[in-house]
Amino acid sequence: MLDRAQAPSTEEIREVVMPLAGLEGPLLPMLHALQDTYGLIPEGAVPVLADLLNLGRAEVHGVISFYHDFRDHPTGRHVLKICRAEACQSMGGNALAAATLKKLGVDWHGTTADGAVTVEPIYCLGLCACAPAAMLDGRVVGRLDEDRMGKLLAEVRA
Image 1 (cartoon, rainbow, N blue to C red):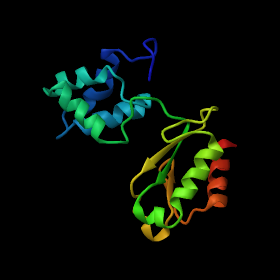
Image 2 (cartoon, helix red, strand yellow; image 1 turned 60 degrees about the horizontal axis):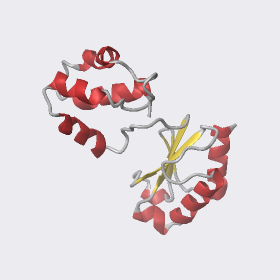
Image 3 (tube, rainbow, N blue to C red; image 1 turned 45 degrees about the horizontal axis):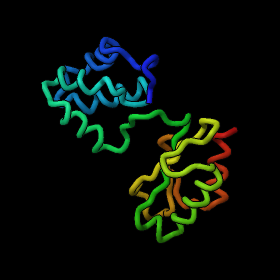
Image 4 (cartoon, rainbow, N blue to C red; image 1 turned 30 degrees about the vertical axis):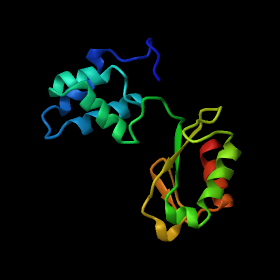
């Protein structure tokens, strides 16, 4: 989470979201803009968005917590999402995930000590025919095994 010295001010948050206020259903675009700008949804954004959109703070918080891609903490420079859905599990996804987490020395949602990689679970990437699958920085990769995963990780840790 951003510490208080790094936390954006109300004015800075408004600068990011105000250009989107005229959109129909602006909350999700505003949340994406905040995350793109700060790498997470700043804690101070909830009251600003609630006020701006005439919503309750609980409604804004509910949207943020419903969508797993919105974060309240910073991630590593690269985000690896490993599919945990049934097709991937049936094709060795659990063992691949366990080996990957062990190799990186992290648990789910953890970031490597060098800040290079954050590993998150995801529940279906739509690549069931190519299981097990993962997504690295938005790029989906199927038919993974430990060797291919190792090559992916070498790309981002080099």
